[in-house]
Amino acid sequence: MLPTPELVQNYIAAGLDCTHLEVTGDGQHFNAVIVSAAFAGKRPIQRHQLVYAALGDRMREEIHALSMKTLTPEEFGQ
Image (tube, rainbow, N blue to C red; front, top):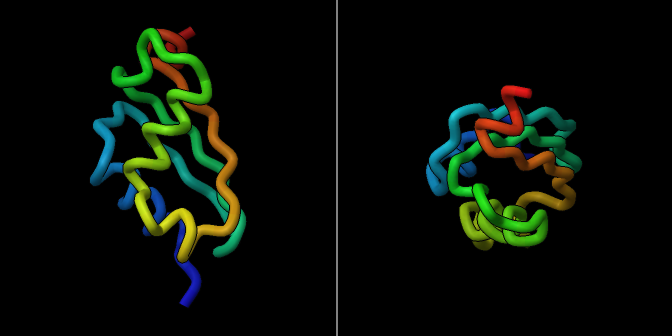
């Protein structure tokens, strides 16, 4: 069974406190807009690592491709 965008969104939300989270995709390739205060002061790669940590093994086993836009609440509000 292919994961749905809603399922991927739930996985991220369960492991990362987000103020805004939007996931779209076709079951194999996903796009996400993730807004979290946890991203403050972090470089893009560090932000992505936080998301990958929230997804855990699902990133290797269920989700084949995830494109992310990671923002702090302040960046998102601009």
